[in-house]
Length: 184
Image 1 (spheres, one colour):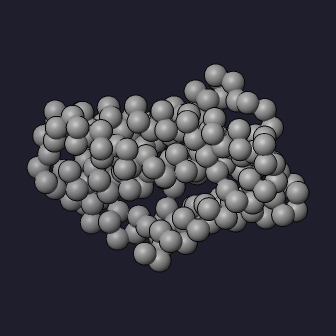
Image 2 (tube, one colour; image 1 turned 90 degrees about the horizontal axis):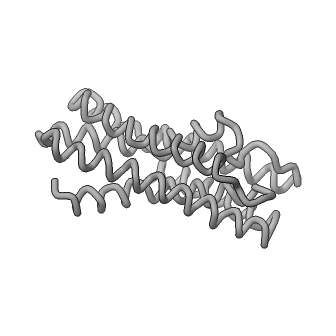
């Protein structure tokens, strides 16, 4: 796998990380500080690249299992986060789904990273070498980090400008992503 292929794969894997960060951060009342951005983006990057590596290490076993159930698990997690966010917005009770707590960060990280587990397993089955996997691992880590930071800052700006409607839209998008992931 070339470096360009690694970067393109990383961008594809991180699109959902960006979306979750964008949609979930509309509830933040203030612009997040460097500490909060670091905590969230590093958590997503560690989970995403960690599951990629786990998939590669476990190879065929995880590729078969993850390929069959990844869309269901990821979809259910996104439906949960999106529905909770939507219900809170409708009740005007914004609090828990804004990636402030570890529980929500980990749920969001896992929901968006199960595909990385499957990709790692597939790379192992293809006979991907360590050097190719290393470039993919580094690319996924860096692109996830950057995409989550960009998503949080963009979502926060939208949330501060559009308030409750941004949260309703964000919750609806996450809910739709979860349902689509399970159905398609």
